[in-house]
Length: 90
Image 1: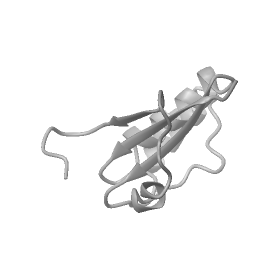
Image 2 (image 1 turned 135 degrees about the vertical axis):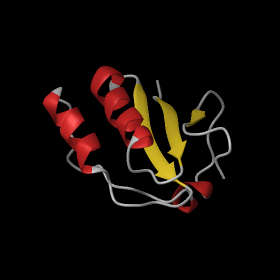
Image 3 (image 1 turned 120 degrees about the vertical axis):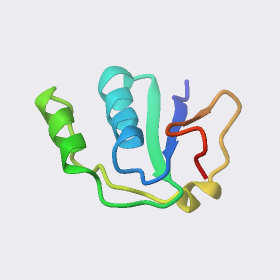
Image 4 (image 1 turned 90 degrees about the vertical axis):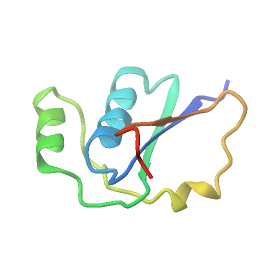
């Protein structure tokens, strides 16, 4: 059975969405493929990486990515995209 794909979205892809990606991989990586992206990607926040590492969650390979990288990959039926951030997110 294919894993369900989940894309976490936020503005900078430097904190919330990276945490979502890392947490889902850590907690349910056997059932889900987790990705993250931002509308205006920036450098991963050092406190985000430190908080994940403190909990024993792998941060290797985590990087801010652009939403444009994922626009070409259509989500399949049952896949999810979760928007994180302020209500006025662009």
